[in-house]
Image (cartoon, rainbow, N blue to C red; front, top):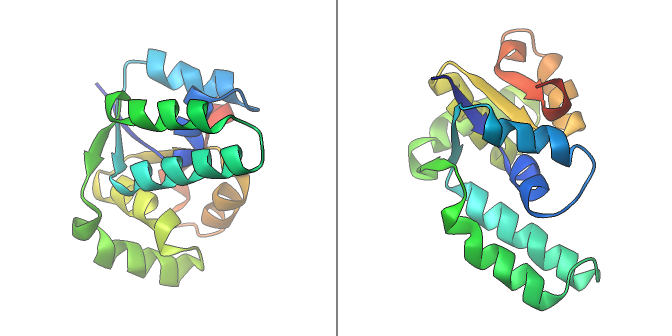
Length: 140
């Protein structure tokens, strides 16, 4: 079984209908082991909060989605164990340490990060030694 790292932009598409939600859903059916830094929960919860504040979701629905997060089909890895590597990736790429947590995990596991963040994909693909570690969700 293959292992893929997924970020919050993918998981959010499992929870609410957005562009590329079908592609994100196919990851759940593909049979790969999905893993993410435990930062994932904070990022998804924050996005649900933003969606409720903007009126895209009711606060009740947003809360239900956040309450269901522990049951998503993603194993987590502690951020504390990735902090140094993520910081080095952030320095090398100019991306945030938050984004770099996911990429650092993909590098450590010698796999790919799957993301729906096109800007992140473009930035990482511009760094040849890291380009093989990232995939845009619609390409899966």
